[in-house]
Image (tube, rainbow, N blue to C red; front, side, top):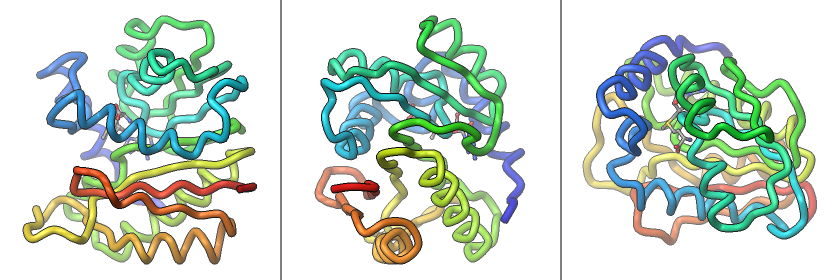
Length: 206
Ligand SMILES: C[S@@+](CC[C@H](N)C(=O)[O-])C[C@H]1O[C@@H](n2cnc3c(N)ncnc32)[C@H](O)[C@@H]1O
């Protein structure tokens, strides 16, 4: 299932022009909420002290790698994928790290121990809901296929009392069911933190 990502690419490239290296450029209203998302996603990692490799789909300006370093996770390689060339250029100079590869692509094309994606499913613009959900499921298959140990993702939650028309709010149970039936027996839902969203992580082994 392919959807048109051009408006999404433009949104984030324009944000970067407006705000520079700032959590608002990647759609988050504070650096604290960006970090909280990273903490929840990182729960998939079995042992942060043992060297591991990372893919991130929708890496923005590369803040996830900085988070891992600050929190002393033993990242040995980081592959950041993004559809925005401007984001990747910014990530390259901001992170400036030999462990990092910056790749201009809408899907993963190489293996890592763990794969992550944060926020890429939230803005759907006018895309039809069913098509967007098929796109998400295809992307989850792509993430799992390129993860030797596991992957994690987040989406805005359906448990809200107000919805913006251009955003996508997901029932987490649909995705728990999809991941259990199509990907792995080892699926965890985190929906106990103070943001209007949830995180799922999927492991190959518990
Ligand atoms: C919400 S921002 C999050 C950035 C980063 N994960 C963070 O939290 O700091 C989403 C980023 O993903 C990119 N993006 C959206 N859909 C993508 C896709 N299918 N493949 C690659 N990049 C994508 C956007 O260009 C943007 O830079």
